[in-house]
Length: 221
Image (cartoon, rainbow, N blue to C red):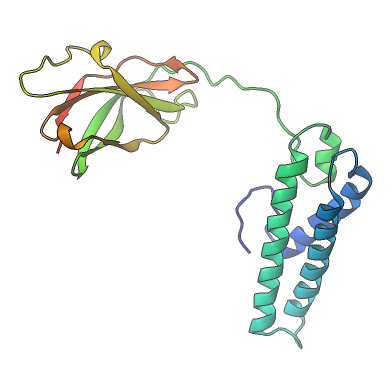
């Protein structure tokens, strides 16, 4: 059974118990939470199918490779329906914290935790990827990469051909993109091949930026 979400129990027995709790809780709340009868009936049918399949897969007499596969299929369908039900009906009011507890879910945390202003300085290292592409790697000059203020990176760049005026500092760079990855790729047009790309980066967090990193350059392949 695929485990794609940390709120889902880690065993089939646990999933089945949670689904049965959902049956108990959602029935009386269906109108208030705008849950359709179709969704409730689907949940009921999938719970019954999963319970039957699990019993067959656990029974020494009926446990066969076919029964095991049928059990996996039944629980895949049940968990998919539970994820869909959570997304459609449980993520918006009027659910209360007690409702989330009754459903076996964690109450929503509506308190925004300020992660602080970024202060780390980063630079850009480049590597070849392919024609008209430069790989860019973020390297920390100062600061802690694990600091929660370091949410992402704004990479600024400009392109200059031979004989054109090159930027003298990061403030002269004209294009930018934001990434949360420490490795990314800049794609250039065919006509940029052989030109020089000048780059500098800043840590960025919700529009708040850290100090400029050094200006670096690389030849566009």
